[in-house]
Length: 257
Ligand SMILES: NC(=O)c1ccc[n+]([C@@H]2O[C@H](COP(=O)([O-])OP(=O)(O)OC[C@H]3O[C@@H](n4cnc5c(N)ncnc54)[C@H](O)[C@@H]3O)[C@@H](O)[C@H]2O)c1
Image 1 (spheres, rainbow, N blue to C red):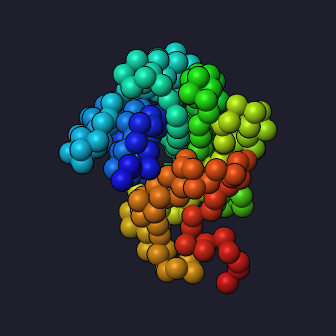
Image 2 (cartoon, helix red, strand yellow; image 1 turned 90 degrees about the vertical axis):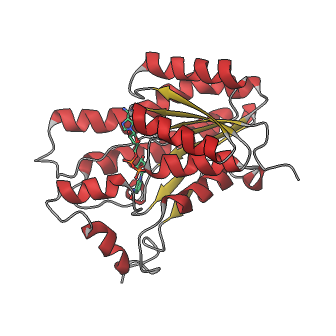
Image 3 (cartoon, rainbow, N blue to C red; image 1 turned 135 degrees about the vertical axis):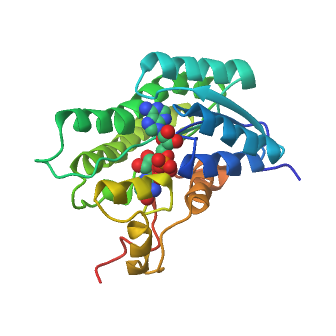
């Protein structure tokens, strides 16, 4: 039986670890060729080795998603290597945990560049390639904090809220091109980012992982569980789904306790 993403090409950002790496591996297992874009060369190459170890086809592209030139080059290299692009997963992100007084202008700009401008840039160059293939799917990573606010995360919440509406606006524009655009909104997921956030807040590294017990499902997410939602949004199983956001958070936003 043909695999779900056989003959499909996926370009994803932030694939050196965490949710991006788990999703790259899931797409490869489902038959896709995967271009892994990241600034971290060693870890990105490691993701490609894991893809190849699982019998898949991978390509590492060193790409700073805040650079227009890098995004354009990443799209071109993916097309030259694999012949086109069917799925774009805009996933790279950073977080700076501070309130509006303590956030520096540099931190604000960095978060908006990596979390939002990157999606504009990568989509700008990738969408014409999706159109050449007769359509495709774009999945953007937002967050539960793109829907509700959270303490000490002003730049992050602002950036993820922007991703939600960027997604809807792109869905309005590109439905006619047979391109569906959706976002995934993870809740706390056990990745290097979550541990980094704990350090930024002056907490022990495991602190936010342990807070998972407060969620209805009693734990934080695994990167693979977010990956499964991304594959759904990129697949024909969601063929009439566009401009929406899929919350994957163990029930974290379901209600107040
Ligand atoms: N982990 C969570 O709890 C959580 C919750 C909600 C949303 N998210 C979102 O999920 C996405 C993935 O996060 P993660 O938890 O896997 O984090 P992570 O830190 O494990 O991975 C982020 C990746 O983005 C890459 N990256 C950062 N800046 C880049 C740049 N300028 N150019 C290219 N790549 C860059 C990093 O090198 C890294 O590989 C992010 O958008 C994040 O905001 C994560």
